[in-house]
Amino acid sequence: MKVFVIGSGGREHAIAWTLARSASVREIVAAPGNGGLAEIARCVHADVGDPGELADVAEAEGVALTFVGPELPLVLGVADEFSRRGLKIIGPDARAARLEGSKAFAKEFMARHGIPTARFTICDSAAEARRAIASRRFDFPVVIKADGLAAGKGVSLAHTHEEAEATIERLMVERALGAAGERVVLEECLIGRECSFLLVTDGEFVVPLPPAQDYKRAYDGDQGPNTGGMGAISTPHLLDETTHERILREIAWPTVRAAAQEGFPYRGVLYIGLMLTPKGPHVLEYNVRLGDPEAQAILPRLESDLLEIGEALLAGELSRVRLRWREDSTVCLVLASGGYPGTYQTGHPIRGLGEVRRLPEVMVFHAGTTRAPDGSFLTAGGRVLNIVARGRTLAEARQRAYAAASLITFEQMHYRRDIGAEWTPT
Ligand code: AMP
Ligand code: GLY
Image 1 (cartoon, rainbow, N blue to C red):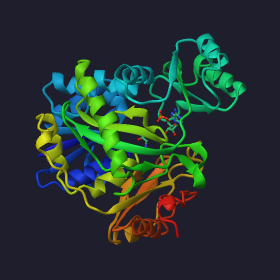
Image 2 (image 1 turned 30 degrees about the vertical axis):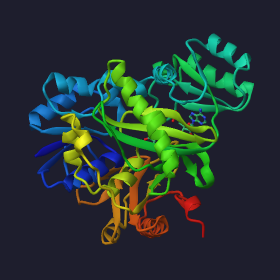
Image 3 (image 1 turned 180 degrees about the vertical axis):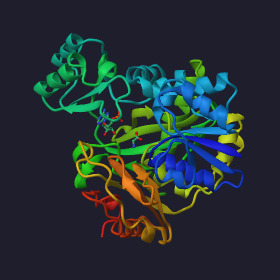
Image 4 (image 1 turned 60 degrees about the vertical axis):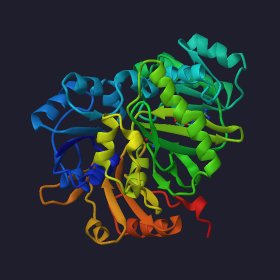
């Protein structure tokens, strides 16, 4: 069977790598792909922001099934376009993808259904937002979120009145994020540990994936600017059984049932970003796809066939599927370009990939690379490589991941040294 993966990052490389292990997958096409994906898939050019073009690729290539990595095509209706043309695709339609596409929509949805989330107010103008800040309905720090898609740049924490004013000015007057900041959500700041809880659903039945933890800040000790993610871990002990049950009962199932009840049954992967507060788990955000870099940590633990899961999902038969997971723990390190998440250079040669390839239980997913004509790899993005290692324990996975990372070099490479450290005290 020929399958199609949409996207160009480490998450998409991990999806393709997982599909490549399926006995039924004969060929993988990726659009637009990257240097690493090109080793296991045929990369074709297509704009991920153009559902029509993506459907054209699927038709021309005669693919049997399509997996979508990033949120943009889903929010723009790629699943609707594929369905109209009778093409099979895993991912929610545009109505369901509003859970990520509009934070205001997601918050009102949670409020309607009693799904625990931070207290909030939605503001449609700068004046309204300033009034809400002045009313002191929220203590400082207050969280200010752009309503629309902002590639991880839409959330700010304001510690003072002045900071809140400045953020509102930037989003709503200067329109620094364009239309995404036309509306904002103000919300109370929740305190606790964060956890990424992902599930697959066919619109009725919920199958949770093992929880993961993402490391969003650029530097060790959760310092520095927010990034797309500098690492992730997945280990059987991230959530205790009571909390896991509670997330399923209070958040995961109610979300899927409520979406169906409101007329937009959710089909695909749903990523629930959670804050584990003293008052229980609260939803920070919904994402309508696998996380990046969470997918790179989660998928290497999957024993079941990803293609079969996708087919069961489309057939509405997920309740019959029993997912099998390795008991192992995984650690994913993100090797980034100097300057990331700010400006950075590209085109630097990457060395050491050959040595890493020989290491057991280590996987390398490419996030931002291209392949030079001589077959070597060059940096081509802010996040360049994901080094993922499995181990019987998290400590063993960490040790393997860091040993592998130490073999890779490229100019101005940087990565965090503390991924998973708080779970493996020495
Ligand atoms: P989001 O894109 O909504 O997940 O927000 C990105 C990050 O901002 C989250 O992963 C949290 O670290 C932080 N964040 C978002 N909402 C809140 C909140 N209500 N309280 C505390 N931190 C938050
Ligand atoms: N790792 C965060 C995200 O995928 O949104």
